[in-house]
Image (tube, helix red, strand yellow):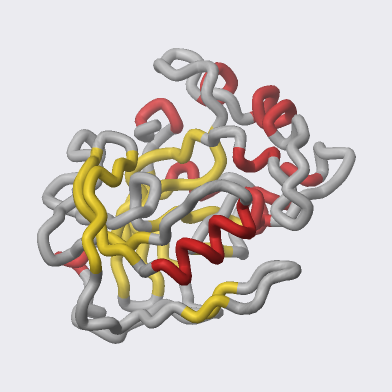
Length: 228
């Protein structure tokens, strides 16, 4: 892996080392445990660039397990150091609809989905429950409540008020799900898991590709019945 930043020499991190030093007491949300340390060079690089002591660590798959929230996902779905789910799905049409309401359009990197679809109605993904992308089955399990990170310009690191102010007017729980809890949260995208039990694309080395077709297998009847 090669990491680049302005004014810094590229950092090269080997991804197939056989041995790691272990760092204890790493925490992410409700999980705490040991992690693999990527070494002094990586630590110094990030510390110098960010101006604060840092260490680059990797999830210790040899001894640790971190599961997706069982309240929303049946069976064991494991994650590493992602926020809470392995996939975030959003549509280009949803961003286009939002940008029509903003004085200054924003790019999709503000929302950081790792599955981006296009060709649907704006926010159609809100109601998707079971989908297939190529031969892979996925479950859309929870609307993604957004924090303040989308307010940060990914190119300049400048923090603003949008898109949160506009999303609060058109995508809050009060607007979308007035009879449910979490009325003050705002939503964009769907948290998604791979339904490995119902996929023909099992095994290592499989991947999604740009242009893969998306099939909507099952939808929620309404936003009131979708998890959030």
